[in-house]
Length: 410
Ligand SMILES: NC(=O)c1ccc[n+]([C@@H]2O[C@H](COP(=O)([O-])OP(=O)(O)OC[C@H]3O[C@@H](n4cnc5c(N)ncnc54)[C@H](O)[C@@H]3O)[C@@H](O)[C@H]2O)c1
Image 1 (spheres, helix red, strand yellow):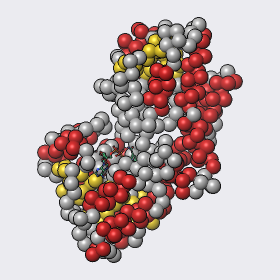
Image 2 (cartoon, rainbow, N blue to C red):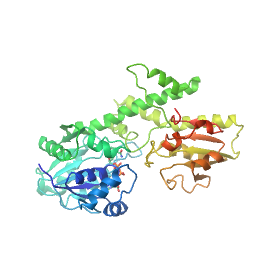
Image 3 (cartoon, rainbow, N blue to C red):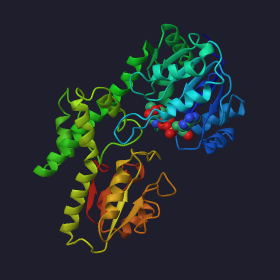
């Protein structure tokens, strides 16, 4: 199947780079987003968030008239749905965005169209999406092609990895798998492996759970080392000298849209079997409380008692280094907990954003400041994200106690 025009539903961190990659490969692309700010930005050739290399790539396809955006879909040969898939308070996947996108495109879908779900989803979601569209359009039942194509790019390197990574496509039929493979092959230089939709869905969840479990191991070691008075960074460096050991880096938790979310979809799909995966989530989610216990120890060593005024510097809010993505960031959780300490004022440094996110914005005792201001005003420094601006700083130049939760200076 040779597709010449595609609509990408959801112009976020994943949808927009995908749209730009397809447009760069010569397809006519329309992006659709319910958020008019994203639509206006794309129509002006501008990227509404930070992702290295995306600006230039978008400008190039925009100037050639290969990409446009709208808040409403229209008829296309293929649709790629790339909307959020968060979880609900009970950790069950919230598929409302996927189903809303399916409803949105339904009136426009034509006979033989290919509909790809790119959002990370629990096993069975592609089938659910297909049922929804076919229910909306009984006239087309049996003619549409449905597939899942999970995305495994690393934020900060999306414009490299979207082209170079191997990828998996899984159709509800082999014809759908082949059509999805052909579409991604227009820009993807990696291998494109075909499977069924459920395996493709589970593969993405398994990859992210693998990361989560391994980070949880590092975080549990950090907890144990803290109790035993061992430097966890030295320990990990030494253990990793073993030729078959590669312990990951501990931190203040795991955040972002993927690793902190996707393992719950496996837990939800097989609650009685996913014990290790659930425990890893719990270990990683408990890290901000561990960090706070260490902060309290430092403050006690300074003679601080609850209610005494104290200024703390929190370095970083993003969920990982050198991005502006603050979603589900454990650094924000820690910053909030710091602000809740009676008597505390918090000087937050996040070089990648211009304003504090909700939850911190408006708190009278929290300010977003420059690194210099934070370091000159704080009684203790809590390093939460290993941004390059912090790594460039000589740790020895900081004359107050430092809690480096994520190995900024290691
Ligand atoms: N960000 C990542 O690193 C990453 C990596 C791999 C997979 N994923 C997955 O990709 C999917 C998208 O993630 P993202 O990071 O791009 O999210 P995002 O929040 O950056 O973008 C999603 C976009 O979809 C739009 N949207 C929501 N509902 C819509 C609707 N009904 N119609 C049209 N637009 C709608 C939102 O306004 C938003 O702009 C998620 O399932 C995520 O888990 C993300």
